[in-house]
Length: 612
Image: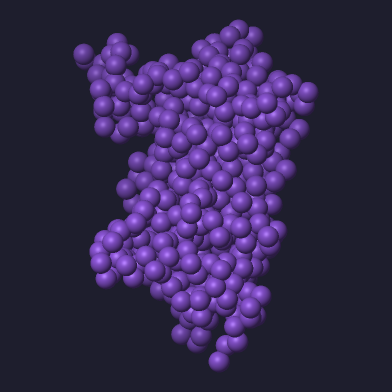
């Protein structure tokens, strides 16, 4: 029988367990049902409460915090708060982000009244399991705490599932249980990995053998193997960056990343070649990945529309290791865990091809055999040098374009700024434009599958507070339509004194990506002034919102830039610690022309008919 300790309550138990997991900040919107827990949380002193204007913003902050730190948490009140948090939890579920969603519900007595008399109080639904049922669809475990004696077991079960399954969990706690006594925590919370048994070892060996066979069956024109690795989201989620580094350094194999795994390793790695995103890739990246390489090895990469940009499928010359299994050509090997595959594959490749045996200078090879294809650099070293000089200042002011903005930002981050930055990119054109920035490991966050517009603004809060990236300033790229969804989260940036820089890409107040998806011909019709009516936004003076959120002791700044000279001048100001724009969050309204779009999306725009 478990002894009940008067010194421990349900609220204290949960607070202790969250602190044990290394969580330093809890994001959320309070309500009366949540109050007793937050009082206990402050008394314990290990976790700081971060109140946000919206539950969605709390979830976005917790999501980004978890991507960096390994686990995050948000807390809300029943019904109205929980359903607002649901979108962020759905994104965490799809993108495998360990997030703890705490939902404080009405007290046990009120639930009894509802059952007996049908009496509803604030935020309640006639369906007693309405919140639980919904969250069961977007979590790896969901628990209701209605009995203090069962609280420790249910809390531990949910948190263990969060660690083990690497996904969100749901804890619904009745208000009058927070201060009820329960047992003290016993033993540490541990991740429970799937064991590698005899069958699993055989499956792993067979998968590795199949990968080596695929490589041997697809040699280059010179007879040498030409694989390329496509590192993906699960490398980041499962914290396997060190293993991937070991693999590419030991074998010399070149690698790209998916958009969602951008900067999972330092992008100065000599084997790194860029972000592969199908037809939306940089031309050099697409050429190396699809034409030079003769087979592709996806490690933790997800087949999403954003990762394959315009391409509908992989092929028989692909390996895709993700979701707990490995596809090699047309063969599939279930229950092969990525954490076990990486070192086994490394050993097999070194044994078969020697240390560094898969190293290649694809540019030099192309020049040797085919001259200078497409005016590409003569060597890989020349290619890397070219990346470092893009975006230099021009002599004459020119109207800003998506590509021009990101070229200058790339130059700024690589040559001008002495600070560390975490780039947080929203969906749509911002994501496509920012994917070719050259960044250090951990320097990029995006939501590449769920693609909830506006995610980046709330996410920047969590990115700034995660201990691993705390010294870095958030740099956000967000479309104007996306920003209108979550602009109030700038209030949290201001309140906390975050020195974020939020670039709002204002393309003439309309949903640019939606227009591209529905009627891409708009971008080829320069004489057509207006997009489809349903994509038009109400115009805002985005920069002026800084004055709304600023306070006497909480500075915030806003500026507008419309040409290259104005952007260059602003970037210069960001290098001056004494400049007032660096005292708090900075909102930058970037004025773009309506028909502009990132050139990476050109494959979607129909070409003009020369006969017309």
